[in-house]
Length: 114
Length: 207
Image: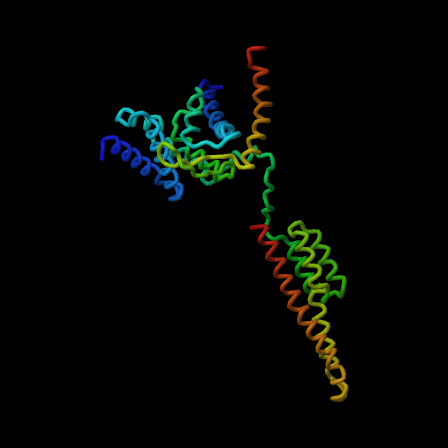
């Protein structure tokens, strides 16, 4: 394995997991774009360019996993809120189950405990 | 136009240029969303000076990066679906198969070539095929049993019996002959329509 492989793999994993982190942010409530971007940005290692979240949100909408509603705001222009569809909830639950299994298995082998 | 407005318009201009390869509706959507983001963040921040605007734009990332992300999955690849709890069944992709064509042909003229048996074989093929729904199969079977056999035999016997010995003989069977002719016509049109419908359905599923 080349040293570069690991960082490449991590980039791929981040890219793959990011949509589910977005879905997870919407699990209990609807949020608007800037809010989603901000919450993802608060956690180190998740997002590098905030602007890339919007194409991701569009994709989730086209896949029927989220839907948007417009709402007036007290400060600034009306906001586009994103919320999970039932397909989005299903996709999130399915991923969560698999992710817990997978991350638990990886942790079992490479975690500090061994 | 203020300095900060110019900065924002410049950024959006570069984004628009970078997004040229995207379909027009996606490009418009992306530009609208990024503009909303900038407006919302600035509306929430204490001031709108040049440094603030530059920070907002820096955090968005380069237009190329954003467009690259927007181009992911063109044409639509949906990694999310792989995780969906209820994977959608892809419709069968095969073209209309020999089985389906044989079924339609036999339903239509099987009974003419080989009375009763020919049509039954067609019906068995119809029900054996996975390309039709239950409703399709019922329509194929019930419209009409025998297919073109009934119209064909009617025409055959009608032409045979039309050589009547006298005007009286022919007239006496007039009413029932009329009813039979109507029934034949219905069976003829029905069978042809049913066959066309089955072919259409078989092709539609495969499309």
